[in-house]
Amino acid sequence: MTGSHRPPSKFVAAISQIQEMIKADQISPGDKLPSERELSERLSIGRSSVREALRALELLGLIETRRGEGTFLRDFKDHHLVPLIGAFIFNDDQKKEHVYDMKAVLEMGCLAILAGQPDFDQKIIRNKLDFHELMDATGNSLLKKIWLVISDYAGSSAAYDHDRLNELIEGIKKTNHS
Amino acid sequence: MTGSHRPPSKFVAAISQIQEMIKADQISPGDKLPSERELSERLSIGRSSVREALRALELLGLIETRRGEGTFLRDFKDHHLVPLIGAFIFNDDQKKEHVYDMKAVLEMGCLAILAGQPDFDQKIIRNKLDFHELMDATGNSLLKKIWLVISDYAGSSAAYDHDRLNELIEGIKKTNHS
DNA sequence: GTAAATCATGTGGTCAGACCACTTGAATGA
DNA sequence: TCATTCAAGTGGTCTGACCACATGATTTAC
Image (spheres, protein in one colour):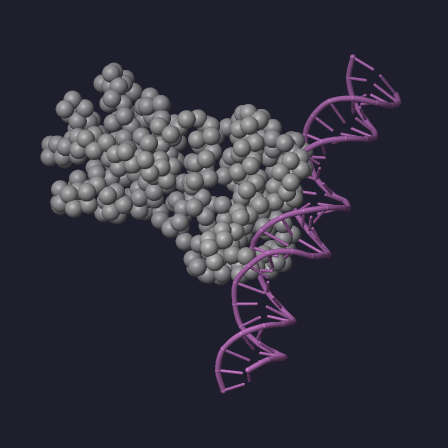
């Protein structure tokens, strides 16, 4: 018996290899990847397997294909990848409450992160709880991406509970000064 | 002129159709999907396109394929797709910090939610900051799912800053009792 | 009769080759 | 010079062919 781990399927291997290739060849977002046929040759696998890998990556929003032109590495700096995680995660439970709470959690976290910065108060006041700005201020693009996704699902009801938020801010300050 | 919307590629269409089929035929997690060849016939598209769709779904962790047996609908429990996306996230920037912070945000949020519950202290103590338990305690499955995903990325370094967490807990309590 | 070996069938995994549709840019013509 | 045409490259799709593997029925040996 022994694990006898069957080697990963070609298409999974292809995904890894393509990733490596991107790194090795220093392909940047927007750049063109080798053609499917060339990838097929370089990786010594059939074009169909290459395609299966590329299609999967495309579905993940990591690459973009343009017929007649080629395959391009996508710039996922602008939330392309997270929505997918979102759609996936949301698939079965659409509990609105959960989404709302989730949003609140992220916003609270945003404030908590900012609390560690010197001009915390000014930021809060200046931006008047505009989390688009505040999220940017944290410098954490992942946090912002996920927040954007959640906000999308939460809708723009934006019925902020300012009292609650102010409480949180107070609490954070205390925590910070302790 | 005009959008001249190119119809979605077959494999994208296949994904939708397969998902509809799953719904229509009431295929539950664990059940077997029609074979690739049958899908090819029923959807009137080539097997390669069917495979591209299935491979993508597999990468997303929505289905599972077993050679010689068939393709099976998967339960969301195993978020097996995530490591892959992670590889790409990290490949780009050094976003590890972001992920780590993100995790902290979620855990803090978890505690904040629990803080509203009567037996807050007991729970914390009883579970000794085992967030698997604590996340469940919130009843917010969305929060937990995302946390699971993020935790996966964050790796098991698990170098928890307990002092920091304790501070947070204190802050939350204060906030709560204000 | 029972247990083991064999075989047929069905399934995913992979490949190669063939077209098609589309884009681009060079070659050609007016 | 500018418009047309054409060749080459690329993704999109299909088909048919194998292979590797799993399963269950069939056959065989005991």
